[in-house]
Amino acid sequence: MTSTETGFVLAVHGGAGTVPRVDATASLTALHHTGLRRALIAGRDILAVGGRAIDAVTAAVVVLEDDPLFNAGRGSVFTATGTQEMDASVMDGSDHRAGAVAGILGPRNPVLAARAVMERSNQVFLIGEGALAFCREQGIAFAEPSYFYSEKRWRELQHELAGRRREMPIVTAEQGHGTVGAVARDRHGNLAAATSTGGMVGKTPGRVGDSPIIGAGIYADNGTCAVSATGHGEFFMRYGAAFEVAARMRYANQSLQLAARSVVDGLAAMGGSGGLVAVDRTRALAMPFNTAGMYRGYVQDGGAIHTAVYDEPYQAGPH
Image 1 (cartoon, rainbow, N blue to C red):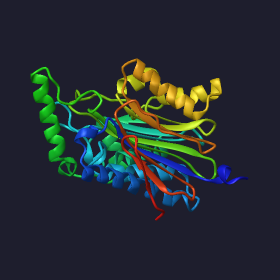
Image 2 (image 1 turned 180 degrees about the vertical axis):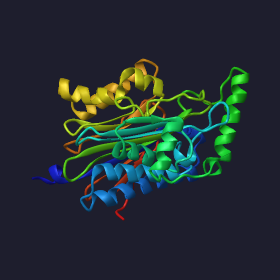
Image 3 (image 1 turned 30 degrees about the vertical axis):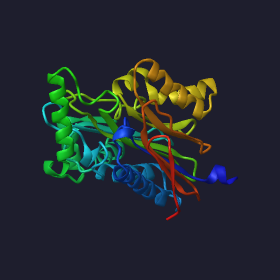
């Protein structure tokens, strides 16, 4: 086999709808690059020793959930009533197993809750109190509400609510969403994806976006691709965005890059902002977005780590 057939690739995103370039300080941008890089290192170190794609994407998303800069886990935004509700999912392309949770607060890493649903239950999707009870039964690590509280996120909510009262929301549709995710192809040719989010700033309590919905915000199939999406979830759900990428590859023989770009452009035409990261069985990589920027990065077998926020690539040396 060639190195392309046996090598690995890992891509991550920290959400589309970034801090506007004009408002982004060099220090804040550097912190985002650092967070993405840490996630890539966590996943790469698993893949580099022959580990599984599903383990790599889970590890990468755990790192992003632990970083308060990103809207997932510890960095989750607040609902309109000042609560926090988190969603997450994982999918293994080798056998189409999947697990998802929605509307939860408590598990320190929602992606591990989703992984437990996939591996330790006969279900795919658990929500709310039922999901929390399952997590407790399975020994998933919990954290106190204070762990998830961020003064920055609280101020974002207050600004948003104040804007709504003036009928001038501060947070735009593009800026109000955020998600983290990872996709990988391991050295054995298996694909996997993981996605996690705190939702949209000021969302209606009980609102669930695309992130935990198989085929909308996540999909993985060894025969086509693995996808993790980020953006205005209602549009990704209506379009079946993640599955649409795979369907275009399977039924229209489109390349990964064409399929992914076409889906993101189609979302934009409908008014949906966002982007996605995707890999296929040949190690091809796509990271299209239709917003001002998308926190993203990738690493390939034997290569350097690359991260980007807007349209500028940033390369880090091997570690």
